[in-house]
Length: 87
Image (cartoon, rainbow, N blue to C red):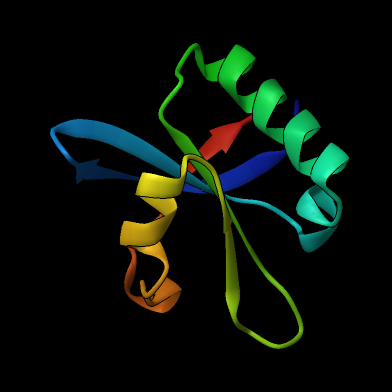
């Protein structure tokens, strides 16, 4: 059994964008963020993905296409109905 990650789908600009919550360490450096993004894209066979991490400051960090990140950046994570994806 693999690791489970919270995810939610959002409609942005007519596309279904999958937001996946990851540990802060998964996006701590640009290299780690790229590796995490690549792994999720390959596993889910989907390009419209945004990663989100919430660190000790409780401010979410969004990683993904700038247009998607801009529309999601003020989202309150506590109000999202999260599902689970297994990797």
